[in-house]
Length: 605
Image (cartoon, rainbow, N blue to C red; front, side, top):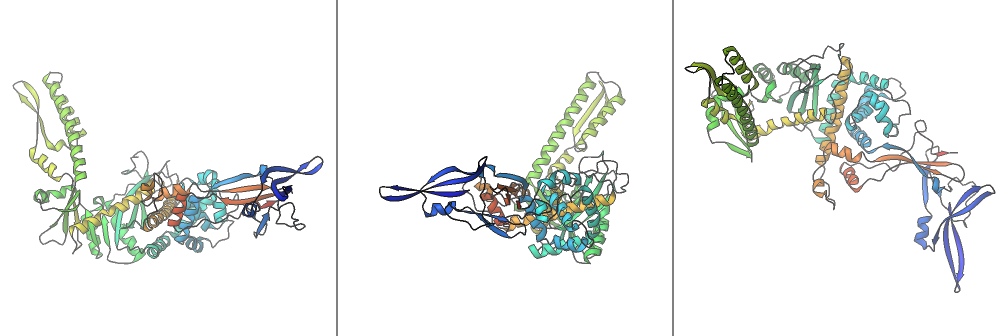
């Protein structure tokens, strides 16, 4: 295709009109066909039409294919000249690019490519195992799925073959399983590497550790996995065998370590194991442990004190009874509009207790008590009516029905005195509210008790530290929802542990992205209806979702010489995507160079 000048003389002046012409093959030989008339062109218009198209030759070197005006003679056999058949231009091989590119950049920022390169790339393989590990972690971040789903659906739809330089046909579920087997022995070194990288990137400190547990269940019998046991299921799947996962993060949510336990392991019994594990990996140090009340026991607190550690823990609600008088006093300190705290020292004690209460929690507990109390009173009135009307005469049946009522309302049945008595009119159900217990229940609603051996800090500071335990809870939410650690389909214990390790790697990428988004300045508001939303940092999953619409594709340009020029390009980012990439300090590559082994050559004769 080229530009043809047409010269005309009018009123004594010479005029040049331009047309766009293409060469076509006919039965009579090559002919030229006018595509469109362009009229007169000034210098800038002419320059825009005489444009260049950049492609790569077989050696990967850049070259220019130009459109020439017909009156210009191109050098003989000039490889830079091409005439493109516009009506046959097409787009091929569209692939997901943006989210995978983001995941790979996070992987590199944590220097996990170097870590796994040194750890598992010693043996010769068709595909370096470190790249397969990157693929598994990026999948867990972007679109969690099984190894079979990665092979059959997800990986073929992404541009990871170009980004990672993996040849076609080299990724299958067997290779992915073998990679799981190779990465598992490096768990301890991986945790230490991530701790160092978070310190270097974000100045993260690990003096205060948040510890919590969750569970995940397995689909299938898992008969060869001794860890799978029936126990308390946080996933509401008591029908499935499960395993327990313990996670330690710092106050900002950066992962410190994790451990797996048998599915029937009690929360309280894990603390000693975790303390020994942390000392073995990181040595002895004066650490502060923040624990949920489900992990707290006197033995566990003694074990922390024995190691010169400190703790800030929740306590069971029954312990608040000894502070009933303090609950009724009005000397609370308001630390937030809906939160009040009070520090209570125990005479001749080494510990400090902090009473806390929140308005929202109080309203919630009052609503729950009211609902269950109304339900129990309605059931008692119904039983009383049946007895009075003579429809229920057997005392044993009355007591059984009463027992069922109390069993259905365990949270409020201690507020009532209920009995079946003999009266002049026969057997009757007699019940009344225990005012003392009701008053105590009203006083403690919305309140909870913290316990610590940390000195020289105010109640507000201690409460703020304990609230950071929500970072551990947020970590588990991310693992279970965004990273889909549940359910487990692997039946062998090492594979299950490796699956948890990949989820841990996915969380490492996720929390890195989270803090990169928070650390950068908020995006500039766009002149759209979403400008208010854009004034806040993106969540990790929203950022991934936004970039996932970036695609890579091949632009195929057929030429009159019978060749096809193939250009692998990335779609133009939207202003919102460009702003997000700028926030993260990322720049998209200008072009993707196809691998000859995994794709097509840049030009086909």
